[in-house]
Each structure stands twice: as C-alpha cells, then as structure tokens.
Length: 107
Image: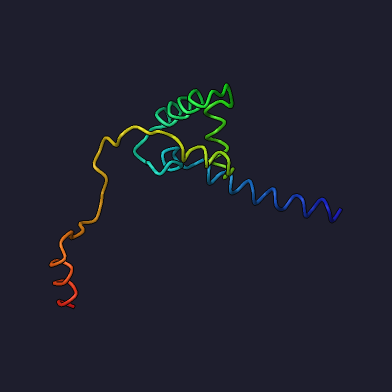
C-alpha cells in the first residue's frame, strides 16, 4: 500500500508539469515566439527529410520537446528556421570606445 502511494504522487506532479509544457506556444520551444506551429512543423519535416528519417512524425517531436525530452530538444536546436518577419527588440549598444569612456566617466 505504501509503495502504491509513493508511485502515485510523482505522477501527479508530472501531470502538472505536462500541462505547463502543453500550454506553451511551439515558437517558444525554438526561442522564436514569432513562428507559428505550422512553420515549426514544416522545419521539423524538412530536417527529418534531410537526415533521411521516415519517423517520428513532426508533432511527436514537438510533444516530446514539450515534455522536456533531451533528444527532442537537441533536435529542435538543429532546425533551419525561417527569417524573422518582424524586427526583434535589441538594446542599443555603443560601438565606439569614446562612448564607453564617456559612460564610465559620467558615473
């Protein structure tokens, strides 16, 4: 009876983690929130074809990545993704030394 209770508790915690991953948009898994699920699925399909694989299905790769599976996450890092359609927010950074010295002296 004790063994059953200890096995049930981790499953409940895993279920909560699964729900968290299921709610995240697919673009966040590849650090590109601007991408739709269809674009990521197409990139996965292209990578599978490039590697000469017949499986798994692209949706299976996404679900495995949402669950935190290392192989799926590593596979997503190898995808060739489309160029961003909208400008990405980046902080302004000075590129000349004089700007850096003025900032240091001003403080």
